[in-house]
Length: 398
Image 1 (cartoon, one colour):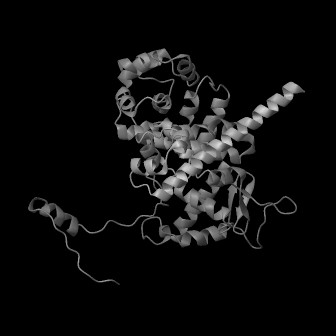
Image 2: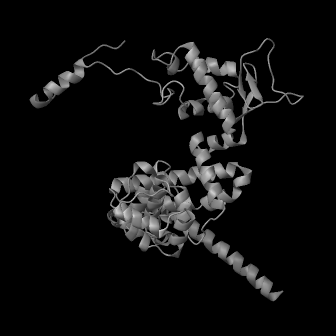
Image 3: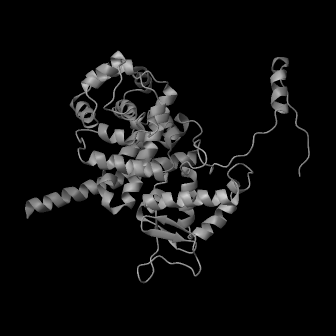
């Protein structure tokens, strides 16, 4: 143990409040693997599903018995709350295992005769339809579970994304990017309340792409009028309405509308706009990885591949070219742009001394490397164009 003194300095006005805090004691430690607010008998938490899925993928807990031992080493088993007894842990494990089997995230390893492996004298089991998982039954991660792990997505979020993608694939609007942006809007969009009184004016300003996308989602002009007048809407869920509202906002950012103008147009704080943009960018990256890991969803990977980079630089698209330079992140690209070096060609033509003087905290060595890298990029482009021109001339002469 480490001993020492802790000194708190505060004003006289906050001293009574500080005393209350110091005398109040510490809150009980609760494991994130605990079940949600529904209590015993409720659905297993997403954190516990993710933990068991990772355990099976890493071969740390590939049987029901090993899973039980695995959970016994977690905070859930030692916190001393109402879900820590061995019987409760077993119940939680079986519920979560059943959920993973039903979702198809994990699967039973079949024996030589196509039967699930079972140890001698093993009678305790988890039954899912015609499948029985005993204590020694070997489990493995399915293609869906492996794809969710590679995409760094929660299993529930991955399933919902694939459902949305399947629905969109039946009538995908490819006139622009709005429908794809809707797919990567945050799933918890209902927590961000749009200005329903302003919804009709936004709907009226939509172009043909926006109207077709709204129509595919079930949003019509009558819905927008009912929102404006405060009447309830029963044929479209609130989640769809909120996500489409955010998709329209992302579409404006996609079209390089400045952040302050977008925040004012949609009556949202700038911090919320930035948070939604970051969440959508992460969802696009994860969605592309998820589709790439599933052979049947290769088309989704192709559609989402270019979406994430554009979203990441939606607020500053002019920086994307500069960020192609090695070791140039957004902050350094912004410095170069403000100093007048807005293109790779500008950096390639720059003198090292001028570049060092124009950009703060840029050493001469780093400046020389930037100029050299920019010139190499231009030389490579020239060589590629020359090769293409020679191929065209050869075809014309043949």
